[in-house]
Length: 405
Ligand SMILES: [Zn+2]
Image (cartoon, rainbow, N blue to C red; front, side, top):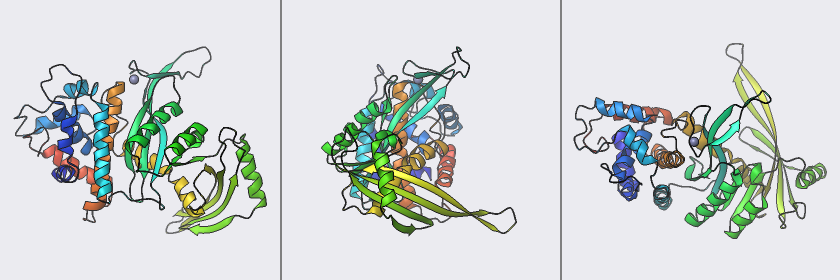
């Protein structure tokens, strides 16, 4: 299965040609950046989880490193300190364009939706680098216990079958998530002008600068309204007390939704916005303590969102678009950590951390498309099982090239 996924990457996305364009800042390197990139992609495609396991697995090979092009883990780590991040972003873009042209990327709820959010990685009390953010985590007053961490903002496209991961931007020490998000949005608007029509974010993104930036690029915005002190929130609560909601059932959830156009209640944003309130009751069943019986549980939620999506977008679709924000939690951050070991720090430096996330985005995008479109065997019904099959072949492979083909 490893060979199959690598060949698929080449056939549809020219992946191992594209990595020829990557460079790094090493002086007189003995192993080229593209051979290092090939190794990193191999490590990530099979979820190996660490550079040391890579060293061990290539030593298992009965053929060995004949070409002298397989890097050691320390060479990979050193090169990742200075690897060209923009070249990796170009590869992501090329994969996106090929996938879009081949109709592998589909709209979700009639729209192409971008989702943005911040995420924290490699929190540690011991390991740090000069680019770490630092906080005091001591619960004792007057005592200092430092904790080091990195954060980044990610941008993805929500989809009906999988999320497509587009780009990341680090949040530098002493700056807020929105500053980083602003840079990221500027870049994705420039690099992917037609990839998305609306951007969804959490409560932090209910920010006039963000709404205006997106409007300048012809994009709509939607964000969670959760700050109870806001005038908009009070207005929405008031109006939903007077007006009748639209009620509908979708799958096992009953929705009661209010949709108001409000103008002049958001100081820093002058145009009218739609304020959506959605009261949701989801029924689910669980195994009861009594053997063979079911227990039915009701989960209630009350969501508020603000968006400048025009009235032509139906209420039901607006609610689904706003909920698609969860795809960045589930399809990006959680899956990357739980299935792909993304919380492992392959190399602790600012550049290497971003580089490994971008490499992982390349791998996850291809893997998700491969899984959705090419796996017909019904026994391979979940991605983690497919990943085990890829890993098994990788470990047993014979090494003739920088990647074991
Ligand atoms: Zn650090």
